[in-house]
Length: 257
Image 1 (spheres, rainbow, N blue to C red):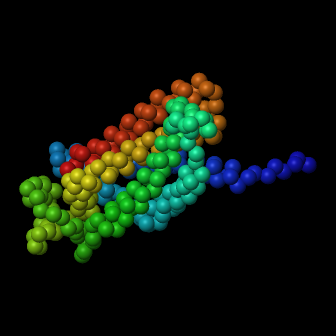
Image 2 (cartoon, one colour):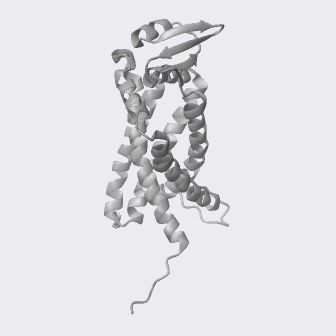
Image 3 (cartoon, one colour):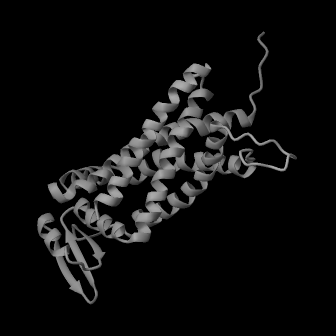
């Protein structure tokens, strides 16, 4: 009989962590493609962003889909990622000679992978609470309502989007026929705030780097790029992925306000 070989829990967790990370890279692309359409809405009345958001919000069992295909992979990936970050030791800085200093590219990437994981942990929690609970349009009798701060462009933009406005004190209540139209106004308002724009810029850049540096490591983990030549050749492709993700995310932040 063939002898059974015990597989360590660490080995299994690393593989699960890697798979969840690869899946989250795919989701991140989808998420930022949708968000990037908010940058184009001045010229097309937000039709692409509105249509995509409406399609997503109309999915049956949406909350179940979000929990199973987004929430659980995030939690699993974050759990093992936090454990690895807490135990990580960096050796890229100069020392007094009592410890090695290896300021090489992949060592720097290892350090930034761990540092960006903390940025993402804080950013994801804040983003989910803000956009899925605090700022999410409220559905009232088949209409979607958001509260906005008045500005010089709000009346013109509401006319173009066919959204009705009601002024209440120092706020404006926007009532739209679809969640997409209400959300595009809320996204615009959020990114008009300089602190929010700066925070989300850092968030997007951290996510872009973490995603594709992690993908490079995952491909090695799963045996897709084992030779030194293959690993070197894949690095520029990963940087290209970082650039694409960063462009999509920054377009939404700086192009929608």
